[in-house]
Image (cartoon, rainbow, N blue to C red; front, top):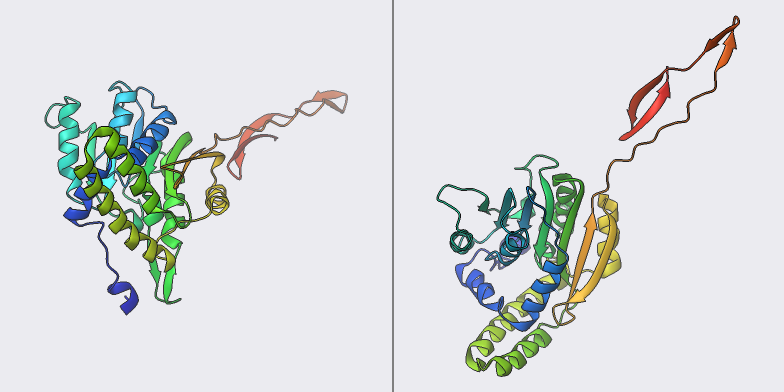
Length: 296
């Protein structure tokens, strides 16, 4: 790997970073985003869901609670191994017996892709402020590119069943983490937890400075909304909708993998041949992924 990529700081796998983000989950902007994301989730009994960049599992817990414990599987994936402990606590709150894998944690970096699962495995995929950190350094070009980001969107599309839902959030371009921290401090006065809130707001501001610096280098991806929408449509997603959240510093986006379209061609009229009526025999065929009816 080039010198530029090899010396790049990476706080994500660190225990201190993981636990700092645990604490930030109770700050008002994060609570706003969690509530907005949960409102767009519609898990059904028997569904399988994947939580990308799950952190301590707040969205996983929201899925479990919203389904009333009726999901078949929820997998949380994150590059910080410390989050396994948070998932153990989540499993306890869900009152799952030992050995039950309904809620489980996978330690992995989605920048390397999601090849471990077969196509159509999940009914839904959710992600909170995470996919924008899929990173890839091109030695050929000598710079960071969006290759891992684009590959991740393609993997998400592949892993969803037809009709499956993708709900995720990403930061706006040049996000103001200072504004997020300020909103958090105001929340501290309302909650009368000034010192604790101030400490967590400062941690968010400190990590935010690193994230914005790396985003300017092209390593991370705070992309304009039209760019994100185009990438989703290029991957095959439809029905893209969005709203602002996180103190106005994040886009919340929902889209779907389309159902396979069935095209049935009109039956040909009967023709006369040697004074006999001849009808075309319909044969089902799939062409370019579409089911069509052809005449033999």
